Length: 219
Image (cartoon, rainbow, N blue to C red; front, side, top):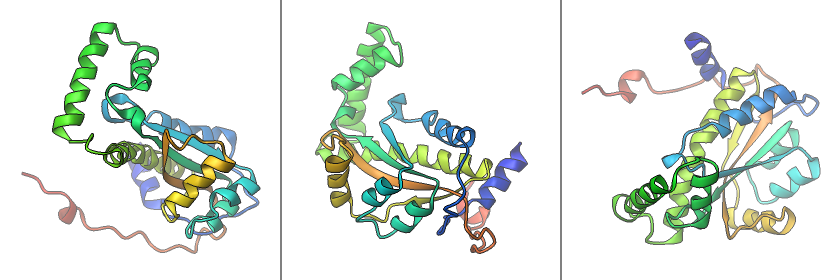
């Protein structure tokens, strides 16, 4: 299992051109999204929301202001847009209170204790409440954990992928609000991912990474 995992990591790369005729099976794509759903997050609060787009017209609309995403989206089998909750990640939000009760199934005394601890973490340890952008950026970092897991799950399933940040954020968020009916007062756009199969699997650059001795330091 360990060998197969590392082999999948070595195979994974940012696919630039997808085979428009090939579709990912429901089983494989559900496996990818399950890896995202089960991903860890700070305090277990899951600040992410994933939009899965398969309709060709909608792919074009959401990548109108993406200099890195249009070609990837139109060829990909599935296109994921990752949103992150903004103000709802504040320690005293109704969303988090409902989340601790309905999802985490915590008793009231534990909710109170966890809320106080989370408040101190946000106010003192990480200084996340100085402005809305600071809190939103912190929450966005959590969603990138899910992205890494989805990319790796795709590689394990033999599915190619391309993570995308090449877009005009403000203009794309406006499209999400106007054409996709997403409440962008609650959400921020974090990234996009194209999933599918490479049009030319052999035409890719070899993976380059720094050596272990340059990355890891034992103390």
